[in-house]
Length: 443
Ligand code: SAH
Ligand code: SF4
Ligand code: F3S
Image 1 (spheres, protein in one colour):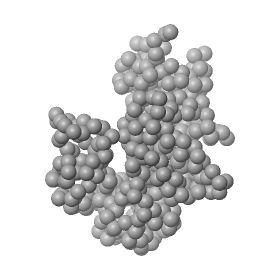
Image 2: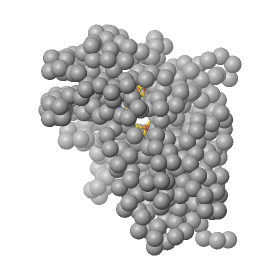
Image 3: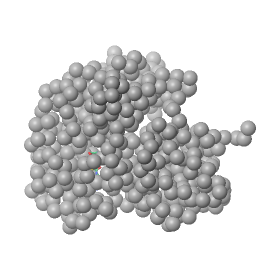
Image 4: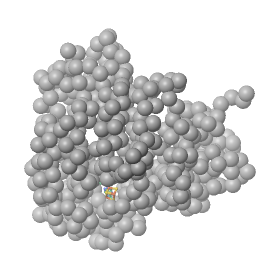
C-alpha cells in the first residue's frame, strides 16, 4: 500500500467552519488523506474561508500567495479553497491565483472526492452551486465507538443557511436558504459522537433556533424538541446551541432553559444595535425594547443564565445618539460576554450601497463599546469567585499538572490536580479570576 497522503486544513470564521473542516477531512480520509498540522509536508492544503467582514477575500489571496512557493517545490501538491469566500468568489479565485486546484462552496463539499479526482486530469473544478441533494446524506457516516476517542466537546450542525437577510450580512448569499437536518440524522450523529467520548455537544446553525427539522413522527420539530430528544442520550452531559436570532426564541426553547438540566445556562443572542431606527435599517425586525423584554423572560426561566451578544457599530447613517442607545441597551442587559465589530460593507448586500460612517468615528465608538463590554465581562467573571461550578475538562494547561475545562457558563477554568483526565466532569470551587479565565480547585 502507498503511504497515506497528508492533508493540511486551515480554518477561518465561525464554528460552523470548524465543523465543516472536520467533515471535509473525514470525506478526504476516505480518499486516503490523513491530517497533518503543518502545510510544509502536506500533499493537499485546504483553506476553509470566511467572508463575514472586510478584506476577507484579500486575506485569502495573500495566504495563497504565501503557499505558492510550496507548490513550485512540490508540483503534486493540491491547493483547494472552501468555505464562504469560495462561495462568493468562485472562479475568480482560480483566475487570480493559478496555484489553486479547486474551489468548493459550503453546500457542495460532499463532492470533494469527485473534485479531487478531476484535478488529477489537470482540470480546476469550481463547485459553488447549491445542490439539490443533501450533503449530509452523501458524506461518509461519522464513525461510531470503534474509532479513537475524541475531544470531549464537539460541534454538530443541525441547521444551515439564513432567510433573514439583515442588510449588512453575506451569510444568506454564501450559505444559502435555511435548511434543517432531519431529527434522526442529528440523533444518529450525536450518538456516534458520544460513543467516541463526547460529553458536550454544541448544536450549530446560522439561525439555530429557527430549526424546523422533520421528526421521526413525520411532524416538524422545533429546536426545543430536538434538545429534549438529545437529553435522553445516555453519556451526553451537556447541550449548547448557537447562534440564535431574537425573533426565533420560542416559548418552548425558553422553557427548556428552565427545565432541561443538560441545557447549559449560556445564551448567545446577538442584537447588533440598541437603536430602533438602526435596527430597522438593518432589517432586524425587532426593537430594542422587544429584545430587553425577551431577555427578562429568559432570565425568569433561568435566572443565572450568562448572556452573550454581537454588536455592530458605525452602521451606515448611525449618529452618536443612536450609538448611545446601543451603550444603553448593553447597560440594561448586562452581558457576560460580548463581540463587537466595526461595520464592514460587504459587496452585494443592501447596506453596501449606503453612505458610510467615517472610519475614525466608528473606531472610537468600537473602543467605547468594547470598554463597556469588557467591564461587564470582568464583573461576570469576578462574580464567580467563591462559587461552585461544574467543569468539563478538555485538555492539559500550559503549566505542569494544570488542566483546562469549561464551566457551565462557558468560562475557561484552570485547575491543578493529578486526579484529572480529559472528559472528566467535576465540581470545582472558583478561587480566582484572571484576564480571560478562572482558577479553581476540585471539590
Ligand atoms: N447568524 C448570526 C451571526 C452571523 S455573523 C446572527 O444572526 O446573529 C456573526 C456576527 O458578525 C453578526 O452577529 C454581526 O455582529 C457580525 N457581522 C455580520 N456582518 C457584518 C458586517 N458586514 N460588518 C460587521 N460585522 C458584521
Ligand atoms: Fe446574517 Fe442576519 Fe442571517 Fe444572522 S440573521 S446570518 S446576521 S442575515
Ligand atoms: Fe464566515 Fe461563512 Fe461563518 S462568512 S462567519 S464562515 S457562515
